Image (cartoon, rainbow, N blue to C red; front, side):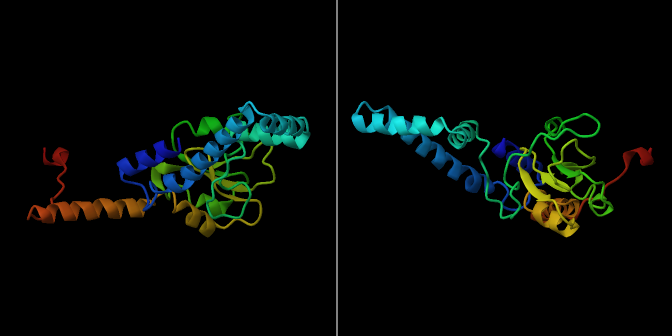
Length: 217
């Protein structure tokens, strides 16, 4: 999913600069951790006394609450956190599947492949951002049954949190964080216009005039 939505945005032409490259910086460290995890398991399975002694220690750790939690998080991937350059502890992690006031869940809201700006308090300042990124981000003003102390968050199409706040909300912070993952409508329009001009000049022609055929009739 991390690659899929980024490829789709790139193909559509509404990806900000560097979006596709972020796949490498996010997923390659994860791949390295998985390889280390596999190497550790291979070490435990070796038929020698050193491996059996290490296995006994690991079993003792799993029998503890913290040890069981650690291994469960590693196996299920819930401990995964991307380094997205934000301080909030939820940023870079998979978003909890919040149940909203209308009974829908966040996971259901993400099925159409768009990002979500989830405003738990219906703040007017965040409402002004509705539509800023066109169809790439949907603004949802709704409280949740358990918001975990959060006031608002921005969720990428792959379900990972790009921005979150449990204090004073700042639209500037949201737009700064979103600029890394979503192109604004103005940026998208500029890209289209620029490509149109470049293509036309390359053919040695003038800019085309758009004619409404219906009106000519």
